[in-house]
Image 1 (cartoon, rainbow, N blue to C red):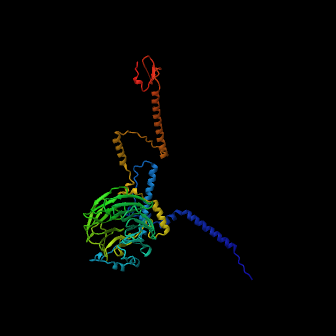
Image 2 (tube, rainbow, N blue to C red):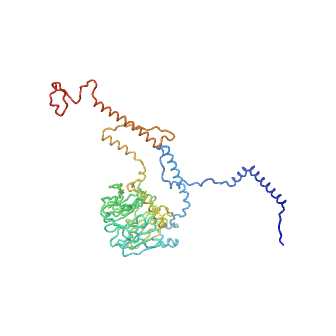
Image 3 (cartoon, one colour):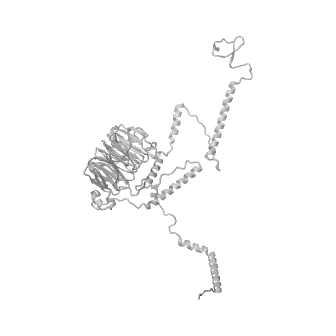
Length: 571
């Protein structure tokens, strides 16, 4: 037996009527007090701190790249475009300053207890108190057979290049100890240098400069760089710079393989070379105590400074390009302000430093035989004692700070050593500039972009901002030269169209109006010239028989003029 359930229709109708009434009440209530509910909801959801969080002006100033001068702009459209671009630049600077919150890494330094100095802390103590990953960065390579060694890090700080004086060259990823290549060039090596990527490096050998790939295969032999001593590389200009035993300074563009300049410095043997990373000016130290600043555009030095009374041994310029450190054989280390070319501080060290290097955070490292000293902020303040001191078993040949790492690499007579220097490297890197963890595809894209944005060697000057300035003196000088040459300068009134509204003063319309005036002036000039020629050729109307090309002789005859007419006896 099946059971069926039936609904009571009367109860269903009653329920539907109640639902309709409730809905009508809700609609009426919503329409009557909609504004009250909105006010209450807005009050409940109102933010006590409306708008974006304020950004400190100091952080915004760090990310600004200057501003445009709009006072001399008369074109309305151009001025509007400049104003909109300026707003975009300000927004970009504000966003960059706001996103500094995501930079979690911070730079730290050693802090000693009361009555203790930081230079008394040894590397073994630092290694025992850091994490395992940082402790692995302190290591030593014993290579006694082919030393002393020159060394160089890549721009992203991932790869290391070693070059022994007796021909040993090795390239490897120093953090993981993965070897890229290892060769022996069978002749003396004076210096080594990475190029724009870790795929190529240059080696200054006994006679010439050779270029190899990361597998140790020889790519080029640069015979115009004869007997090279030191190498350097300008990454934004793709220029390989070398100094020779004969006193020449060579510039080579590696992107096109063209020799840009070969300058005779007249400074004998050039074994001291450094670059200013701010303006790409090369600095050379000479035996008479002078430091010269060079550009590939001039055969003479831009600046010559007498820094020491004896020969220069080492030069270093900080990242900002404001301060320069030099050391001479007189046993002094001096700090100069490049803006004024005047000395700021002078340090007396135990012996003349043979190597000087600045870190990304402003630390200065100096080597005195087998002693390595690190100074903290020596440019702005006089340091009474070093920040760190490290003693080697053999004399140091070269030193260099690893980018984005608290590591100092030391090339010794018997190999290579890497020590920990807290606070030396920049804690946060720019992945668009130099990314230590980039892949192969990212490296290819970066290389293409860098080639497209390559700066021409003609733009290397002491003041990089001079390129964007307008040379107003040149026009005045040209006018003055013309006046001296001709004795006078003809004043020509230039037609300036009147400014019209409603788009009639666009650049095209102004040029059309100027061309119309120019054509009318040219037409008037042609008419005047034609009238003058017509007057000369036409005969006068009062004497029909007169002819300017004939003259009358004795007998009343008219004879045509010729070259012998002056010997004929006239009437």
